[in-house]
Structures are given as structure tokens and as C-alpha cells.
Image 1 (cartoon, rainbow, N blue to C red):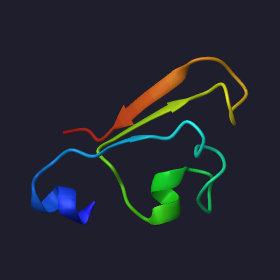
Image 2: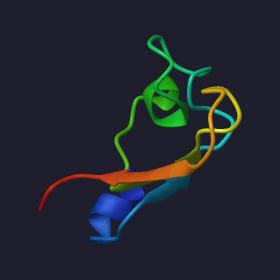
Image 3: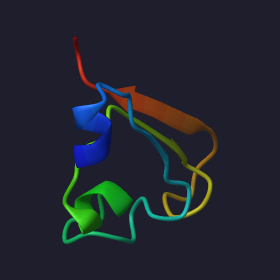
Image 4: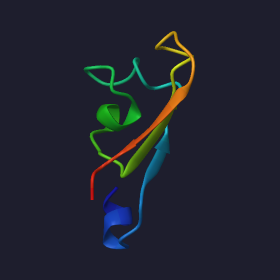
Length: 60
């Protein structure tokens, strides 16, 4: 995250297996490692037990 910020790069995390499992609140890899990427992509068919997926990011 720090390296990306220093180069003004966008960080995108694909978190299909981390959502609902990793982190203190189950928010995934980003919460586990303590960073907040620009975009998180994940699936709802693994830990969530549904169908589909999601793409979330910050409002600019």
C-alpha cells in the first residue's frame, strides 16, 4: 500500500477466499493486513453462501 501510494498507483485486491474469513470482523485480506485498497473484488459463492460477486471501492 505504501509503495503504491508513493507512485500514485491504484491497488486492486481480488479477495475471493478472504471475505468472511480473514480479519477481526471477517472483512478479508485487507482488514487482516491492515490496509485499505482502492478496489476490492470478491465472490459471494464461497464464504457468503450465495451467488454472484462484488466490486467495491471508495467514492472519489
